[in-house]
Length: 101
Image (cartoon, rainbow, N blue to C red; front, side):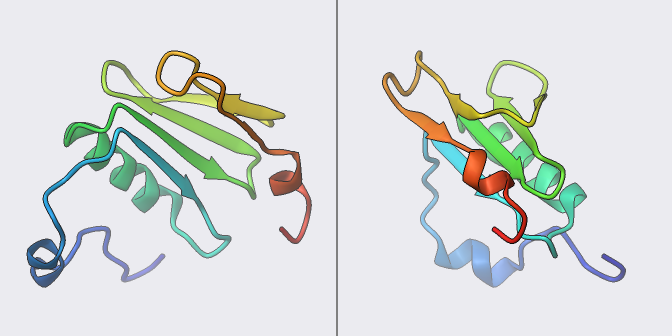
């Protein structure tokens, strides 16, 4: 987006606890800037998140960020999961891909 910024404001950094979750899931809205979302996911990863999923419903993509590698993109997956970190958890995506979700 023209004129937008991807960085957080200093007062935001003071208000939030300095804790990092193991897993982050970001579901992009149609108005979100994907470059900013990728930057946000890299920041999560760099701060210790073990697994991050960036779901871009408009593109039907899921970007998988892990602490030990480069992001990987899956095109139009029916579901996502991670048996090593989240055994038994499967997130179905077919409804997310539907127009108007």
